[in-house]
Length: 181
Image (cartoon, rainbow, N blue to C red; front, top):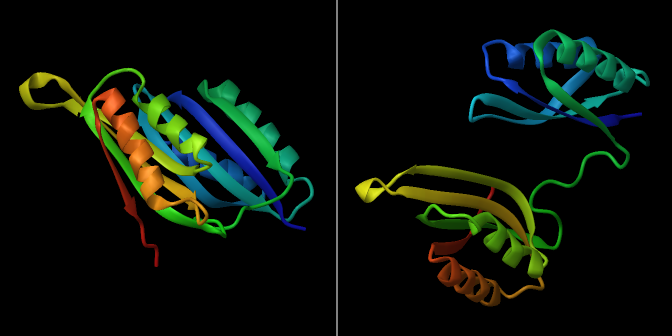
C-alpha cells in the first residue's frame, strides 16, 4: 500500500541541509515525490512530499526527523496524508491562471488579493513574493500566484474583482490564463 507524507523543515541556512533531509527520506525507505525549497531571511525552508510502501516508513521518518532537530537545530513537522496524493494542477473542473500583483511594498497586498481569490472559490496552487528596490529607492513588491479557477466562474468577473482590489491597494494586478503541457 502506498503511504504519503509531508515533511517540512526550517532552520538556519547552511550547506548540506538538503542532503541531510534527502538522506533521511532515503534511509526511511521513502521517496521524494515533489518539493519546494527556499531561503527566507537567514533561514532555509523546505516542504517535501514523500511516498513509501513500507508500513514503518512514517515511524522511521519521525525518528530520523527528531535526530535532525536535535543535531542541527531544525524545526521539522511530519504529517501523514490519509487520502494520498491529490490530482495534478489544475484539478478537474478548473483552469490554471496566473495572478501578478505589483507596486509599492506595503502591508495588506497578500491578504487583499488572496482574500479576493478565496471569495470567488479560487484555489491557490503556488504563491511567491519578492520585495526589491524600485525606482527612486522605494521598495517594489511583486506577488505571483498560480491558481485553479473553477470552470463555472467567469474570467471577466474575477478579473474585475481583482482589479478593484488592486485599485484599493494601489497596485497593478494582472490575470492571465496559463497553459501547461
